[in-house]
Amino acid sequence: MRSLVSRGDCRRGGALLSAPGPLGDPAMPNRPRPLVAGNWKMNGLRRSLRVLGEIEQGYTPGLKAKADLLLCPPATLVLTAAHVLVGSGIAVGGQDCHAKEAGAFTGDIAAEMLADAGATFAIVGHSERRQYHGEKDAEICAKAAAAHRAGLAAIVCVGETQGEREAGKTLAVVRRQLRGSVPEASRRANLVVAYEPVWAIGTGLTPTAADVAEVHALIRDELRRIVGKAEEASVRILYGGSVKPANAKELLAVENVDGALVGGASLLAADFLGIAGAYLA
Ligand code: PGA
Image: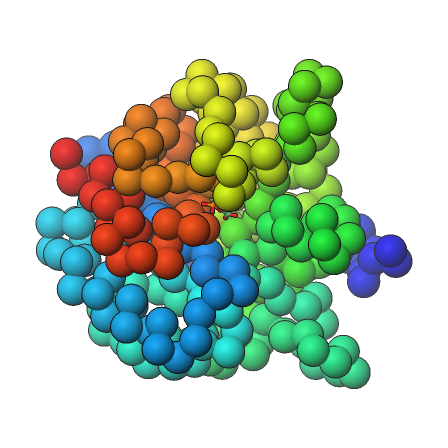
């Protein structure tokens, strides 16, 4: 597939947010504030917005003190979700965006449109986009730069397939995806990386804590090259793939895991809050 912009354009592109960035605990000034993000994928009708109300109710001051929450419903619900959640402290995001600001791209959605609807994040490069829409690193990088241009934080997803893991290529694949799909102009305020092993998505399978730690350490290291030493430690790196209330505590305790990207379990308020609740203990 032809990429939408040249890699060079993408790597340079992207306006920076002026926000101070997602810094967390003042006692650990370089540690980012955790982010628990829900990706509803192609699920959700207007009546599903009730779940957002339930999540808002469960986002108690105690939990608010510990973690940020984000919900990414299908594009048809972004505007209404942003209205429902206004003032709640819970952010809304899109699941994808186009690299261009506007134009003849039937069915596509620009980052500016997501921002206009009230989104503050956009997921880019999810493995389902890579798999079913043939998206490659250069296009994903252009999408991340588009998110930045629109003032959104980009959640750039990376992760190996089962075959790549079995062939011992996990670290090489994740490194290649990161180098290809994160714009150089990214900063801690507008970049989140999500490590999602493809074989763990929707399967109930998860890597061991040691495997997650190994990949997240590599991502942290690569971020140093991309965003620089001053910023690298405070970019949030999420783990995603079959995160459930039952395994959240163990996965979220792994070094360099700064939150979760949750698919199936974000469709039920109790499950999503059960995962975020891992930060309360
Ligand atoms: P899952 O999906 O939690 O249903 O495995 C994660 C994702 O694809 O973001």
